[in-house]
Length: 251
Length: 374
Image (cartoon, rainbow over all chains, first blue to last red):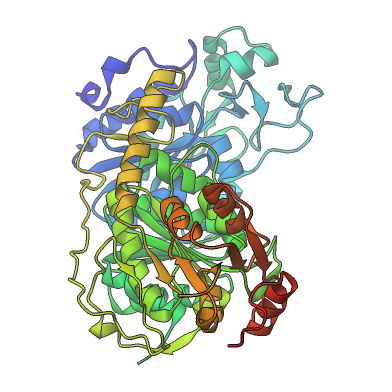
C-alpha cells in the first residue's frame, strides 16, 4: 500500500487546504509503491519550502537540507550509495533560484538523480513572494505592480547538455504525472520533472482564483499534451523531452 | 620523507578512513583537492566531487556523511565563509565531517597566498545560532597529519563538523617526517611539558596507539529517519515552535560536546624558570616564536575551541605579563582576556609577515624582555 510510505500519524499536513502538494505526494508515493521503492532501497532529499516538508511525511530515510542545497547532498549520497534510489523533491524557488547554480552543474555532471520540482511559481511558505518562475506580470506581495521579468525557461536550461531528461506535467493531469515520475525514475541519469501545481492561499487568490479547484480547472483548460515525439515542449505543453544516454558516472 | 602540510592533512584524512572529498579550488588549500583527485583516480572506493562552489562542496560532504562515508573538504577564508551556513546545519542535524581551513589574509579576497590566523572566531562562531564546535590548529607537518586523524575521531564522537585550521605557511611548509613511524592515533588528553625542542620532529615516546573511531549511525537507506535542519524531537519530527524541545535538545548537545571536548584538550607548555612573561602563540606563529623559549615561557593551544580556559588560567596566573602573538588583530587575545579576567598584551602579525625581529621590536616597545638576548 502506498500509505505505508506515509507517516499518517503526522497528518493532517502543514499544507493549506486547496494546496497541490498533497496531490503530488500521493501520486509520487503511488508510483514508488508500484515500483517497489521503499525505505530499504530509497532516500528522499528535500529542500526548504512547503514542498520540502514532504520528506518529513514520508516513511523512509529523508534529508531536509538547507535552502537550495538538495542537489549537492543528493549527488553525494548517490555517489556513496550507488544502489540507493535517490529522489529529490523540492519547490521551484529552492531548486531554481537559491539552488540554481547546483541545478546547472548537477545536470551537467549527469548525476543519477530524479528531481521532482513542484512548480507553483511562488515562494509560498514565506507568504507569496515572486520567484524566478513567476510569469511576467503576475502580482505577488513582492511584485505589487506585476512581476517585471520573464520567468526562467527550465526546459531550455536543462536541454543544454548532450544528454537530458525534462518532463512537464501538472497535478491536475494525474495519469500523466505518474507516467512522468515513473519514466524519470527509470532514466539512468539526471532526470527533472517540472510539476506545475497550485498555491491558492499565497498566490492564486491574488491572481483572482477563488479556490484551489479553480486553479486546477485552469490547468485543465490551459495545458495540452505535446504531440508524440516532440523534441521541444511549447508554452503550456505537457510531455517528456529526452536525449542521449547513457553514461552516468556511478553506473 | 619530505611532506607538505596540505599533503599531510590529506594523508591523515585517508588514514582516518575518509572515502569522500568535495572541494572547490582556492589558494592556499588547493593541493588537497589535487591530491584527492589523484587518489580518487587510483582508488574506486574514494569518491570526489569538484563542486561548482564551496556551498556545493560543504553540502556534499554533509550528504556523503549521512550516506555513511567519512567525508571532508578543504578551503580557505572566503570559501570557509560560504560554508558557514552548512556548519550550523551539521550541528543541527548532527553530522560528523571535517572542514579544513587553510587560512590566508582577509577579509574578502585579501592576500590569497599570504598566511593569517584571521578565521579563528569564524571557526568558532561563524554560523547562525548557538553551537559548540571543536577546532584544532596544528603547527607542523607531522601535526597536520596527527590532528587531521584526531579531527575525524572528534567528529565521529561529537557527531558534528570539526574544523581543522591551517594557514598558507603551514599548508605549504615542507618538512622531513616519517609518517609511517607515527602511531596511527594519538591518545587524548596528552600534555607535552617538554616537547621536542628541535625541528627534527621526533615523536614523543610512550604513546599508545588509539583506535580510529568508526561510524556509529547506520547510513541513509537503511531506516525510516527524517534528518532535518529544523528543530526536531528525537524522532526527527519538526518542532519549530516548542521552546521546551529546543532547550532540551541544545542542552543535550552542549553536554555531549563538552564531554567529548574534554578528551580533546591539546596544548603545549614550555616552562621558563625565571621569566615573568608568558607568550601565547599557536599554529605557524608558535613555530616562529619558538626560539624565544630561551627567554620566555610559551603556551601553545592546539585545541582552539572550546577554549582551554582552565589551562590558560592555570599557566596565565603564574606570570606578570601575558602576551598573545597571533597573525590577526587580537582574536585569541580577547578570549584569553576573558579567561584570565585581566588585560593581556597583543602582538598582531598582520599582512602575512611574521618574524622574530618584528616580535622582539613589539615586545621591546612594551618594555618586555629587555636586556635579555636570544
